[in-house]
Length: 125
Length: 109
Image (cartoon, rainbow over all chains, first blue to last red; front, side, top):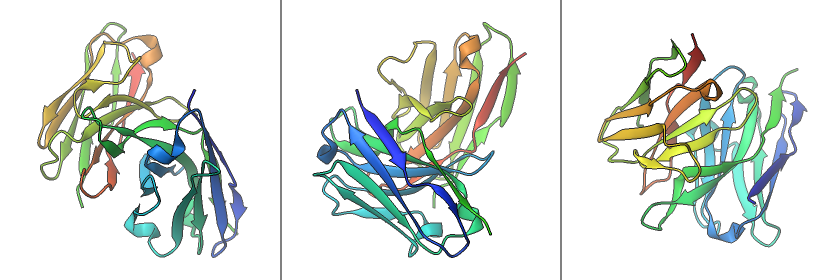
């Protein structure tokens, strides 16, 4: 069974930092794109960042570029999100998620087939 | 950047009704369009991928169609357990950036 378990969320002051972690199990972690998606209170879903299977490619939404860094450790089967210079508008539940494969068997970062339960990040003074 | 316009933002229907949600992309996205269901306090769940493919284990009353810029998601016969918010989501096969629609909250009348 695929499992994604996030940790590291919490309350942080504006300008502060947090590092989110996601422990993966039940699948070959090194064979999948991984993604962070967030959801502000009462709002919709927003893609934050994703990372290729081997970590060689990383992509970010414009609003977090230069502040957030996505990384992974395929030996530890873990995904990370280092968040610096946090702002009030970063307050959200952060989901760790797995990219699937297309019907043609090609890795598809954009087809998100498994999600973690989410971890709450609150940026407030 | 590609924008996704989803409508309606909410709807109320009776059990057994046919429910339709639309999603329009600001430019041609081929069939790179997925649909998710999110129940309150839970993570989203993939229902339809690549516009019309039903994810394994998803009931057949859910379906999707469309290509290019206009897409439709349908629940053929609304069930009480289908109460949720539904999101469309586009992706790019060359540059893996992702955009979600604004969501449609489905309620029972």
